[in-house]
Each structure stands twice: as C-alpha cells, then as structure tokens.
Length: 144
Ligand code: TYD
Image (cartoon, rainbow, N blue to C red):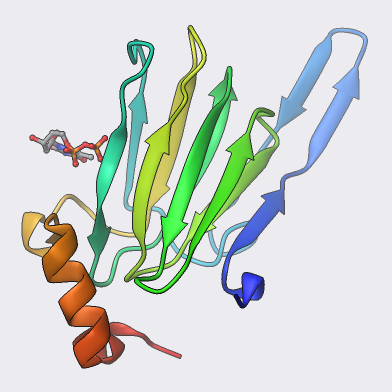
C-alpha cells in the first residue's frame, strides 16, 4: 500500500514547566482552510464512530485527550493509525472510508474540517463506496 497517501502531522509543541502548548494554523500546519471544528467525546467503550467517506472534504483528526484507532480504507486496502498524543494529527484525504474505534475512557477526538457540514458530501454506505472506487467514479473528486 502507498502509505504516503496518509500523513501524520506533528504540530509544534512548546514545553514549559507550566505545561505544554500546541498550535495549528490553517494552510500552514494543515493544507487547507478550516471551515468547521467538531469533536467526539463521552464515547462509550466499544463504540465505533465515522463509518463514512467524503467526496471532497478533508479533515485532520487529533486525539486531544486519551486515545483511539482510526482505520482508513481507500476501497482496496485498510491501514490503522493509533492516536494518543495531542500534538499529532492524522490528515484524512477525500474519498477514504474511516472508522474511529477503541476509544479509551475520557478520550476526545477533535476534527478540523475543510468544509461546513454538507450531507451530500458523505458516502455512508460501504458497498456504494466500494462500487464508486471500483468504477473510478471517485477519481473526479481528487484534485491531484
Ligand atoms: P455522523 O457523521 O454520523 O458522526 P460520526 O462521523 O462520528 O459517526 O454525525 C452524527 C450526527 O451529527 C448526524 O446526524 C449529523 C450530525 N452532524 C452535524 O450536524 N454537523 C456536523 O458537523 C457533524 C460532524 C455531524
């Protein structure tokens, strides 16, 4: 699998005796303008979030607290990323199916998204997603 298609970004971290501070600037530490922020919290043990792909949306997911796995699936292969530090983020490109699972207690998943919430951008049926990948239909949404 071409792992280069997925990127873990290490954000700046200012370490002081008073505690750590990280920061993220749009179009600098992440390759898009942030139009929306959302976060998952109070996720019960054993629950899975995500379960969809986007036609055009990109997002950066960060484990602000605790830990969880993100399984990325391009319709051909799956790759699992473990996030457990708030200065790392996983960049999820468009047209990738994602599942977030194995949430630790008190974990918080922060998502920085390249667009507002548009339900039409979602592909929520895995079989439809697989068919769109197989037919090449999703390629038209790739910019590069
Ligand atoms: P959903 O996409 O199913 O969440 P997840 O990706 O974690 O499985 O979203 C859950 C509900 O929240 C669904 O009714 C859509 C709504 N929602 C918004 O209204 N705005 C948002 O920005 C997001 C992410 C979800």
